[in-house]
Length: 421
Image (cartoon, rainbow, N blue to C red; front, side, top):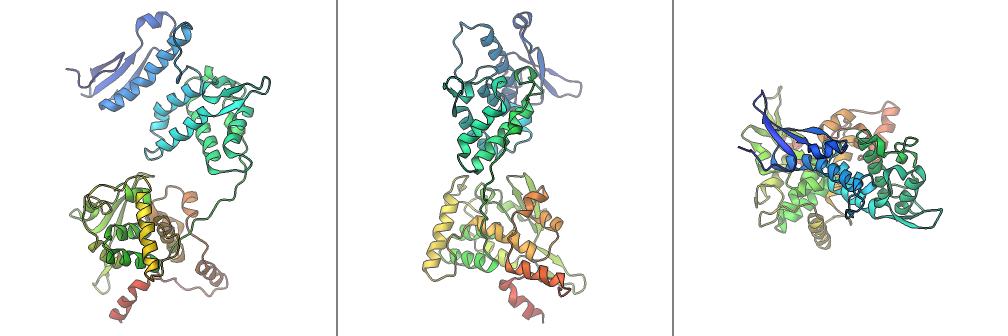
């Protein structure tokens, strides 16, 4: 019995291990005609969607080869073998893309590469306007790559232009070993020769702990506990707004039966699981010390509309759009109009950056900070903490030997110290 629907030219067999192996085999008719693609192992125990995707890579190659051999056949407008657009289609289906690029980032790659293919540049010799996606890969030199970059960056550098170079460079690098005959021998990767223009990168703002909790308490008072929880998740547990809106902070991860003293979250962009302790037992006093008492008070007032801590009243997630950001901004504006000290431009992004800044102000080492934020690289982590006056003062005091062990500033927990005294 066939376990799944089989795409063209695929077969399966039961392996010695008991697994089901899937294979793509070129028909003998095309083998005899000189087709360079003979056979390929697609994988084991593949679900339907993965099997189709794996087989499509080889079927697309076969179809492109057939179209090349028969010039009288109608041309495929979106995928001609050996062109930049063919390269894009092959790359987005290849394991080098699917295994290395997180699912969250894949739509951005496709969006940018689609724009690259649709970009038109002029041929210097004739003045003819050419669509980049229709140009053969072997004809893309450094000068051509620079024209494409110029079309996106204009007179000054910008983020989109940088993405074009980064994504195209990766695409050339990953596919070139599989089809070396399609690439230039003198310049296998022309994008490496493109010089990026300098641009002044804007520094994102941040908000402190007092501001976050002023917003959270105000949102609860206005019946929007889910917005309060979103701000706390971004500040205390350093979640990206996209992860919050997409439901990566479920109620089942908060003080669950298998970890009743922790909150379990997931970072969507890095696919990293974070398990944050909420309390610990002081070995000297035997007292149970709550680490996120203020945050848990906010969660206690957050309505459970669905499985995610942050979702709409009908239980649907806010998703990837700007709806959650818009709701937070509107609530911040309302609280400011009501006299609360919420700064203009308050956002979940600034809450997260504020939490990252607090890590540095608290004197944590880079390693300790990354354990909490789940950044994979030191370079990615360093850009978040802002150069606040407190950090400069602490650095200066340490320089002259006046520094003491820093204490975590928490205006919301002032009452705790009084109780213990």
